[in-house]
Amino acid sequence: MYMKFKGGRDRALTLSYDDGVVQDIRLMKILDQYGLKCTFNLNSGCFIPEDTVRERFYGKLKASEAKELYTDSGHEVAVHTVSHYRLEKLKTPEIITEVMEDRAYLEKTFGTIVRGMAYPFGTYSDEVIEVLSKCGIAYSRIVKATHSFKLPTNWLALGPTCHHRDEKLWELCDKFMEPCKIGNIKLFYLWGHSYEFDDKDNWDVIERFAERMGGHEEIWYATNIEIYDYVKAYEQLEVSTDKKIIHNPTAIDLWAYEKGETFCIKAGETLYR
Image 1 (cartoon, rainbow, N blue to C red):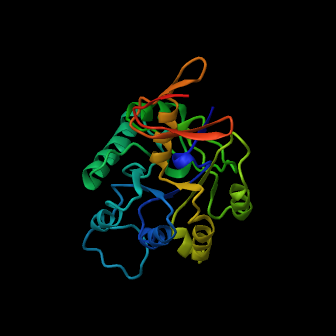
Image 2: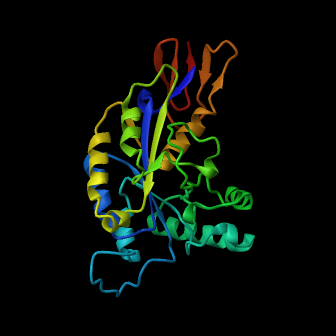
Image 3: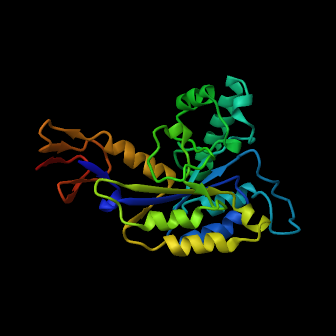
């Protein structure tokens, strides 16, 4: 028996963009147009003053702008620490403060439970991972590209498939769109900073990516936490030794594949096969 993604799909796509900058406004419009889902990693201590007058459309968001943009947007907000320091350079109490104060601010501001994160600069240590696990952080993204579509083995060192400026981006898109082999699933994880599209004058990259990858019935478009929660729920399935009885103790409908059949085990259901 093999896991399928939501709806019985064998492919999932997620994005992750950092720092809470004004370019996220344009990025979100593009993502929404093509039905893509993203996790936005925010530094609660880095919003600019509310009375700031911008000379051009660039830089960090104001707190009020962030609230308006991300609240109930269908996208995820996640921890990026208060101040964007390299966590492995800090002492344990400082790590806790950077993570928990950011988490608390985001939860209060956006009215949601925040359990995801991206490491500032993508750097971390074993000590940082241990601290995060005690701070209620379920996953944290690094920046080193995997160039693969495999599910992570360590969610607190979650490697993305690639950055949007990766020279292999379009090759990876083509490979992702190829049919999966029986029993396999694919996760494409794209990350970056939306201000880079202005810096490099290449908004066409994300527009082409969204147009190319969006709108496919066979792809599940999800935020980082939605994928994490789904995978963890599937791991909780209870199966009899002969695999004829399957119980789903979670609140999430789950899909599986066995002997040429894709089937759903609904939340709380015991399935007899």
